[in-house]
Amino acid sequence: MDVTLEDVSVEIAGTTLVERLNLSADSGEVVGLVGPNGSGKSTALRCLYRALRPTTGTVLLDGTDLNSMPLAESARSIAALTQKSHTELDFTVAEIVALGRFPHLRGNQRLSDAEWELCREAMQRTDVEHLARRSILSLSGGERQRVLIARALVQEPQVLVLDEPTNHLDVRHQVELLSFLRGCGLTVLVALHDLNLAAATCDRLAVMSRGSVVRTGKPLEVLEPELVREVFGVTPSIVTHPRTGAPQLLYDLTEPEGTT
Image 1 (tube, helix red, strand yellow):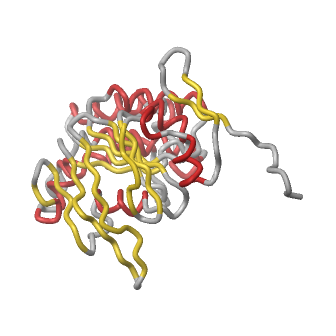
Image 2 (tube, rainbow, N blue to C red; image 1 turned 180 degrees about the vertical axis):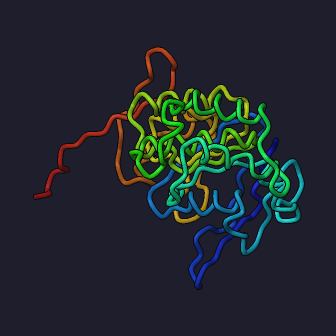
């Protein structure tokens, strides 16, 4: 499923958070949004999963205006993992994951055996099957994150929207998640702070600054020292990963001359 944001602007309480943003992701493509804090990444993604409605502009799914679609229909197409996913109810892990089937059910319809098997497979894929009977409230931040990823997978979306999905995850689970994104075949839009993870994971990057996209392209084309310095305020040395060929950024932590 193709995703397009056309001239999207978002203004809240007189402040423009995103301005005339144009971004697209082709079917099956992994597109990463990178940029400093406050650059508009999360706001742009919130327009995709309908937590926000653009002040101006249009979000299109396969050419159809997202806001013209019934909520249940768009929920069957788009699954989101947000930065602030709240899980305050004392549900078991299995119950939380099963909530991903909600857009596909009618009324009080029960999950079928096939749907419960889908839940089991998602929990197995995200390494939380052994926690199935545990309360979500008893889990660590990283464990909760993996449960919420399983819930998104159970939704069987065509588009995955992920806002900093590696938050709280240890290195092993970061690698497993990002490897999954590369091979899942879904259209993925993901906001990442770590430029090295973004370069290793994404087909294309959209670099955002002050609410707009300043550059899009393949990681090797986008992650240039001058652009990184201009947008992020640091000048990296860029090397090539010896096996994948992806660009990797190395940062000098020494203080610039003249500072105290």
